Amino acid sequence: MNSNNNAGGITRRTFLTAAGIAALSLSTAGLFGCAGGSASGGGSGDAKKKITVAYVLNGKPTSFNDDGNKPAGYEVDVVNAVAEKLSDKYTFKFEGVDQIAVFAGLASGKYDQGLTNSFWTPERAEKYLQPQEAVGATLLGILVRKENADVRSLSDAAKAGLKLAPITAGDGNYYVVEDYNKSNPNAQIDLQAIDDSNAFTEAFDWVAQGRYDMHVIPLQYYNELVVADDGSYHKYADDLAFIVIGATKTWSFLTPGDDEYAADWDAAVKQLQDEGKLEELSRKWYSGIDNFAFLGDSTQTYNYLDEGVLVDPADESALTQR
Image 1: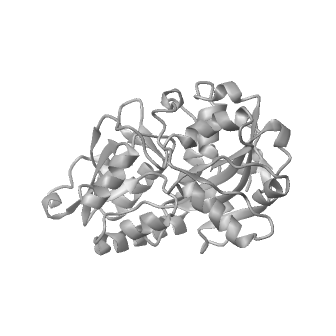
Image 2: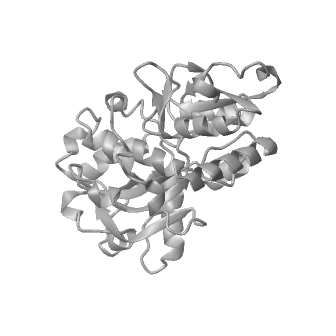
């Protein structure tokens, strides 16, 4: 993840995990999706359908509030690009909330769309409307102590007997490891679920202190929490290493039943993909990295590299040149 001005505000209690955390203050932004960023849809705006998009406030760089208290980030930019393509039919309103509120609002119909950097999970696919087109891609990796920095894959980690920190039940990272285990019966990772919404962040301590040997997380959280000078776990920067092992698609889930908007969303996102706009936005927000380049076969939800990449925080050229 790109690390910038909000990194210091991400702590054990404010960091937004897949299991959610305590509610944050509501922040509402104006209507988007019109020419020049206008707050209305023009003369015929009243005839257009309004799409209320809930975004995670502290989800940098996918969604957050910038210095002007306006919604910003990769997924916000994708929605704004879609809004331009669909401006004859829809207007868009952003509301910043915590991750629990995003999904609760989708279930109740309060929100039409959510931005949470969401991985696929069977629970989400069943409860919400999942578009066919992914909104983005996230680089996956394993966080280890530097003594184990020679591993380059989950298979290497399994063979080395590294102990995985437990993952919050229902978290998207749990299904990443489960998917790997299904495809690698002879090199299994001991996968344990835990009913603890703080496990995602607590695992940084657990790995650094030797209780467990590795933690499966997206690259952006390593950058935000460990590499950034004001990151909550920067104190472990000299003790921990991160190896990119692959990528996963990410989804912007919709409220159930809105099939017409889902079809329009899919068509617009596909156009953006074909035009190279999603790659452009990925490089803008992810430190010059085209996350989509790590997906391999575009029909797959997950893709694992044959040989992972040890991240050098001072030089990410091994990632940006793909």
